[in-house]
Image (cartoon, rainbow, N blue to C red; front, top):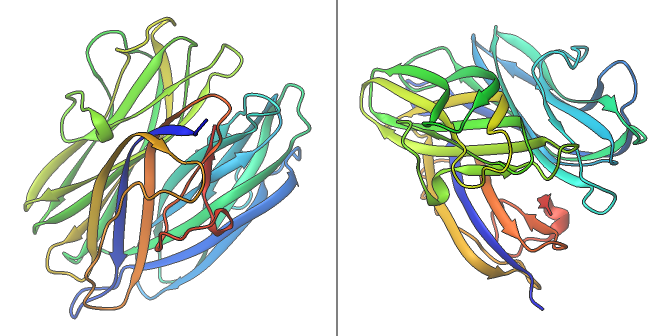
Length: 355
């Protein structure tokens, strides 16, 4: 029998570079491969760190994403941060695996920090914040990415809003979890992203999205999750869209609804981050994305390309490639999903696993 999957996602590419008269947007990246790490300590554990040096004041977007292999009964907190000693009570995402067989869960966490000129270090952190029977040992594979935006000069900028929405009743109209208004003096493109984790009751399928309005989108324009039972109510999400903007004020929303499967109590809590990255038209920064909707794809055997974006870059730079959304697959099938710069990808090149 062939393994089949339905993929509804978005593939986004951002090429960060500089142009005359516009300060440079820089990107640093650190792969994270932390195997069998004991996270039972009262202190957070550094899984990876990235040191950067900048010439002027600005903001940095720090993103930590990948997948975590853990034991049933453990709740593992994972965070992107500028403080290696910050406790789990601060902003973080968390994962909880289902059983000894389905022992992996994807995650994504974003933070934005103001920086002064000089050297700064950012961290990928982990901690076992609650234990109901596991050993507290986990393995984390992913990426730590730091993007620096110089102070506003018409070229590029990043905005951030934390989302902490508890016990939201989603059984009625679409609910706004967060709103971010930005003002831009020139036309350009905005990459809008919402990531974090949620808790919900078993039997409910919760849809969430980023958009210009609260209208319920469809296809690749949303992500969704469902808690399998009352003991495993944590779900992780990551959703991104790209919008062309004119000069002026623009509103972006994080929306959520419960309209499809409503066997639970209809309530959910969301903990995450809404980030908006803006790149002015005419600069050397390029932002492209494509929606991915693939139905009943056979993924047994060689890797199958789900989507493709082609860039025509006039100047050298660094490309950030993200592939995120929903994957529906048959029980017992573990799917590897990856963003890559070549179709001959191998699992050891880095991926996210879902089951």
